[in-house]
Image (cartoon, rainbow, N blue to C red):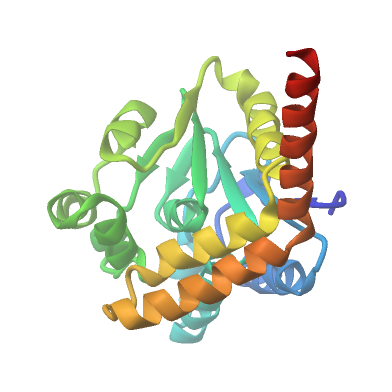
Length: 249
């Protein structure tokens, strides 16, 4: 962690960051630490080496090492990442396949290098892609999600952007780190209380149909924002700017 900015690095470069038991246990540990931090406001999720993440470790799967318990731990880690109050940025380069795509799409913003290759090929391995199909349906709609999940074909960063999965394509690819840090800095300059409540409201749009619940939460959220030091600072800066303009008039 670097103050309000934290880095979560997928770090099995020799296996294109494929997920095994140690990988998912580390994900659970890391997301737990991030969730308990009162300081972290932005998290960058990236992959070491030549890829973001090539999915689950197929060698481990073929050996029978990835049991149903593994999939349960995997999903708990991915869900914990999705539920962080901090704003999360996935910085994707190279392969972003299967579980890698599942990690990327639970992040709030996805930046992709122009060399990124995406796929969710679980069905071709005789598996269900965790909660990936449901999350994709929510993000891009039922028909596109069915096409991606039922066929498991690879698709480019440009295609991902058309589908609405990618917030920005970075070109050339070696500028991904710089582009990600620029975006992170922009987010760090925005009042976090407002960001946190806005993120929560968007998430709740998929798990509640009650306008009354939304209204209750909105009132509480707005009250929290109005009382926050960030809002006070923004308003003080506005008043100072207004006073300066009046004095120059």
